[in-house]
Image 1 (cartoon, rainbow, N blue to C red):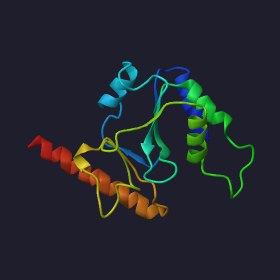
Image 2 (image 1 turned 180 degrees about the vertical axis):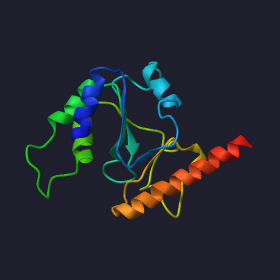
Image 3 (image 1 turned 90 degrees about the vertical axis):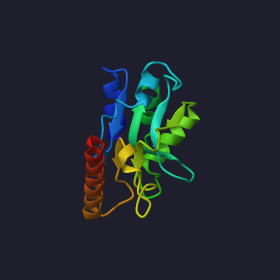
Image 4 (image 1 turned 120 degrees about the horizontal axis):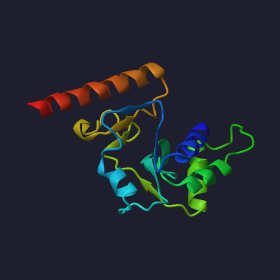
Length: 167
């Protein structure tokens, strides 16, 4: 829940906030792709929208590991939904956040999957198109050693792409 408070503080001094979990590898400048320009310039992404990382098929497509928003009110709607107590039956944060956003009528959209990838749906044996990635979220890996190995593989493959583009 600290991430939502951090995003709220960022939006007090900035027009947009882009949040990344600690297990997200930044392969390119995430503010450079067209999605940010389309958002901040009032393009086809509404100003009240909250863009999120696609989680994959299932009941809640929302993953809060990569979030872009300019909507303080949407962030506050999520903060108001934080449970007073937590137990083993409490849904994970991203489920509660997504439900709060939908219930409050906020516009939620997926970040482009081909650029803002996640390991759950871009993992072995189907690796992503490495050369197109902006970020890679190493979620769905609970073992820290395996998570670090996956992140290192992503960095190596991205470096190969950069090297190949030079020639």
